[in-house]
Each structure stands twice: as structure tokens, then as C-alpha cells.
Image (cartoon, rainbow, N blue to C red):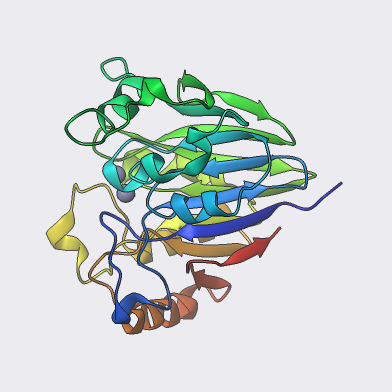
Amino acid sequence: MSAMKVRYWGVRGSIPVPGEETSRYGGNTSCLEVRTDKTRIIVDGGTGLRLLGAELTKPEELFMLFTHLHWDHIQGIPFFHPIYSPDYQIHIYSGHKADVSLEGVLKGQMQAPNFPVELTQLPAAMTFNEVPHGTVLELGDFVVRTIRLNHPQDATGLRFEHGGRSFVHLTDHEHNDEFAQPIFDFCKGADVLSIDAMFTPEEYPTFVGWGHCHWMQTVEIAKAAGVKKMILFHHAPAHTDNDMDLIQANVREHFPNTDAAFEGMIVEI
Ligand SMILES: [Zn+2]
Ligand SMILES: [Zn+2]
């Protein structure tokens, strides 16, 4: 049985921030890939998705899971080359919300005058699947569990299981009393927890209600759930590489097996 491999293609929250001061951790927005030799699942389609697409050269069946549909999680889709090829079959999933259709939102961002090609004109075979929170999906080699997160207009947490190993990806999420226990249970014993750590504890009071954790909250979740390793994700656009080095060092004092995600980072689980 092949190992689970996670690769980060975009680790930034909110907006891409290219430039000298973000070149080590990377400036692209949310996108990662969770895979085995047989199954490739793409999580979110921020601007990092374009780079992932550039690596795909053969016909393939792809799964794409969206944590939610905020811009920083979908803006790479119009620049993802497989959508322009009949060689790709793409099964797209997102958490269900009665007032918003997944297909409608993705269509909306490609409608004139925002983009020259409409989603309905694309040659790739795409399916759109809206799933209620709590749904358990079987996608190729993976069992994927889902949970509702605390975020404006909701977001979906994902737990990937394969061959007795587990990887949890929780973004975008703000820790609070109501969500604490269900989230601890959802993350319980995970080999790796990849989590929204957008703010520092000092910054957080200005951003209460924005739907993101500060890193001391992620430490609380990692410890309460007994996870083995933590990866910090959804870095604030204002945080430079030097800021990220300092955040990583501070978090390691509380939870030593922690890394801050960077573009190109590969984690074997
Ligand atoms: Zn986000
Ligand atoms: Zn968001």
C-alpha cells in the first residue's frame, strides 16, 4: 500500500503576496495536494493551483475538495490547464449551503466581463457535488471525513485516512468554546494536523470574528487532540518570511513537532 503524500502549492491566506519578503514561504493562496500513487485529491484552488496544474501532463481523473468558496480558495481555477482539456475528469466537492450553489459560484468568477471563457464552455468533464457537513466520502484510496468549521459563511474541515494513517486539514477556522470539543474529536490522534494559524496572539484581538485562529489556539487544539505533528497554514499576507520564522520558533516552544507550511513543502505520512 502506497504512503500518503501531502504537497503544499499555496500557503497564504486572503490575497497573493509575491515579493522578496515572502519568497521562502511563498506568496500563493491556498492549494494543496493529498495523494497516493493511485489517487490525487486537490484541496482548494487558490493561486497555487496554477503551479500544480503545470505538473499534470497525462489524462487523469482528479478529485477537488473545496473547504469553502472565498476568493483565496478558488481564484486559481481559471488558470488550471486541465479544465481546458477533454483528457481530464474532475469531480468537485464542497460543503453544502442552501443559498449558494457550488457550480454557480465557480461560474460566477468566470463570467463576462471578469473572464473571457465561461465555465460552461470548458472541455473537461466536471461534476459538482455539494455535501452536507459530516458526510464521509470514499474517493479512490481515501476515506475523507468532513466537519463544519467556524468561519463567515462556513468552511469545511477535512480528515483524510489511508492505510491506518490520517491527515487533517482545518482552514479557515476560528477556535471558540462551541466548536472546541467537536474539533478535538475530529482531529483526535491524527498523524498530521494542518491548521489555520493566521494570527499571532497579539494581533488576534483586532480580528475576533474574522474566522481564523491565532497560533496559541492551534497549540491548544493540537494538544487536546493528541496529534503527532502540526503544520501552520493560511499565513497572513502581512507576515514576511522573518515573521514566519519567528512564529514557527514561538510555536515550537509549546508544541515542538511543528512546521510552518511553505510552497513546495512535501510531507510523507
Ligand atoms: Zn482563506
Ligand atoms: Zn475564508
